[in-house]
Length: 197
Image 1 (cartoon, rainbow, N blue to C red):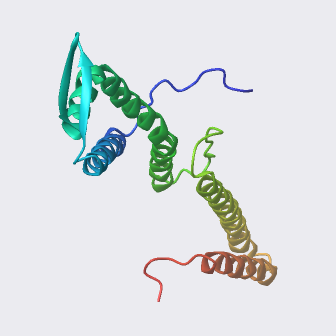
Image 2: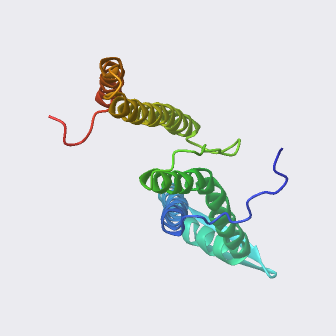
């Protein structure tokens, strides 16, 4: 069944997204100032005539341009600033959402829960990592299930061996228990643990 709802919270990881939004905004401001400085340096030794309110004004081109840009286009500058903030929020949402999901998934894995699958939206980033985690969970779950089944069988065979000690077929039961124990040891050796040497 396909979900019909969409996530409404685009500000998922406030610290991370806030940092990137601020940096992107500063990058745009610094880039604009850099462009204005280059334009001013290139036109530093020129004069400009401006016709305003039925009068002519003469001034150095960089100063006249800066005054005109700030006076006439301040609303445009504010709108572009708001656009930069919102567009960067939507862009950072594409990697902040999956990062949040990965953190919650690792918390579940730490608690011993491997019975879940990470599902990301179609435009989210890090789908390869989600697939790798899903494959890891599936592999680990199947191996742990096999270990659980072997432990159950081993318990049954040991109980049978104890009760069969009186009947004489104890050697067969103990051979089966030893075989299961070896298989369990092989499965456990397949994992590399932190304190292994």
